Amino acid sequence: MRVLKLKIGKGKLNRSRSGNFFIFAILFITSAFMAFPFVYVISQSIKPLEEQFVFPPTLIVKNPTFENFRLLLQLTNNLWIPFERYLFNSLFITLTGTVVYVVIASMAAFPLAKVKFPGSKVMFEMVVLALLFSSPVTKVAQYVIIAKTNIINTYWALLLPALSLPIGLFLMRQFMVQMIPNAVLEAAKIDGANMFKTFWLVVMPMVRPAWLTLIIFTFVGLWRGDGSEFVYSESLKVLPTVLSQIAGAGMARANVGSAAAVFMLIPPVITFLLVQSNVLQTMAHSGIKE
Image (cartoon, rainbow, N blue to C red):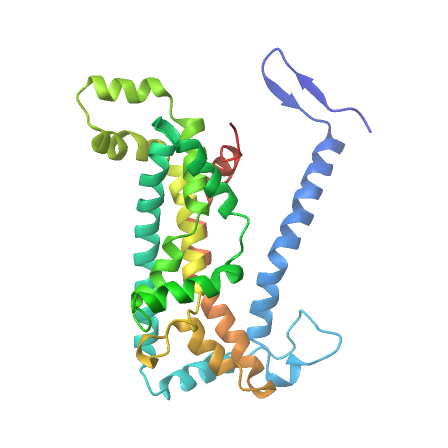
């Protein structure tokens, strides 16, 4: 195999045919590995019940059918609370929480990234430390706080825990440190822009890849969260809770569970496809740098 040649003079990267083949082979294998769960879920959703438990499992469906989706719709239509109510709860929590969280995380990250004040370094270290705690570890503390503030069985019980996550603040702060020159902020100040105006008209457009990436993370987290530990009223429950109850009625509803998984997969995939071009740029500039 010939060694890859780097032509420095014209700034072009020239590869041999074997090098190109090797790179495309690695990319193809990686893409196939990442796409396999999606293909498998879709395959399971169109399998009849008798093919759900075949061993060894097969990816190819012998007798594809959309009966699973029809059964899912039939079961949702027989619910005590209309299915549209559960869908509204999920959409309201997901869309409202995503917009509010992105705004709060961005506004909190801006002073940590570009304003020097006493205690800023300690505050950022606390944010980094908070990243070490997974969500299940904080469930008891969250429940105590929500119970003490009397917001159980309300939308606030689903929204507030999501708004307190440190990942958004960390990601936005790191991106602002890397991508916003101090000279730009000084120029905006000379032109008469105050701090609030500088944030909305200068900073937010410059960090667009970061908050678009944050939209993906927040949307997926809120869409798949059930919040069953904080909400007990049937009219306030969200879609994942109801679909898990429908699909969790035993092996006889395994096919319905596969159809529900595909249904829950659609909105996050659409959201990712709309903003995926900004994810790589954000990840490249969000490493810890002090």
